[in-house]
Image 1 (cartoon, rainbow, N blue to C red):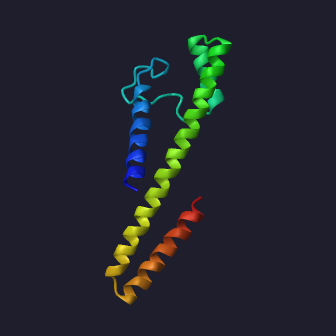
Image 2: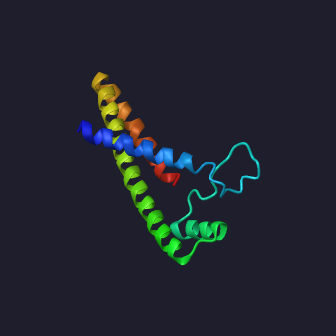
Length: 126
């Protein structure tokens, strides 16, 4: 269990570090803005590849290899994201259970009603 947590932590740190490595990669159209955001964030593999090809003049061989790298990055990032979200959900449930353990029966009813209302509000906002 500890090993899984350490591996997950390292993966998240690596993912965040790789994002920072691209922060000043020279491919961005930041226009000298102080609050810099990488302009490839949220784009799909094809869009990223097209931008890199245009900016760097990639050969077809480079494009094919980079496409594989970008696809793997996307899949790996998705896996890490899903693991993090599952862990976050488990933490939230554990905290909720610890809170409920401190409440009276009447307070537990109110607490559950609050959670149910918030859940409905969240779904309606989607």
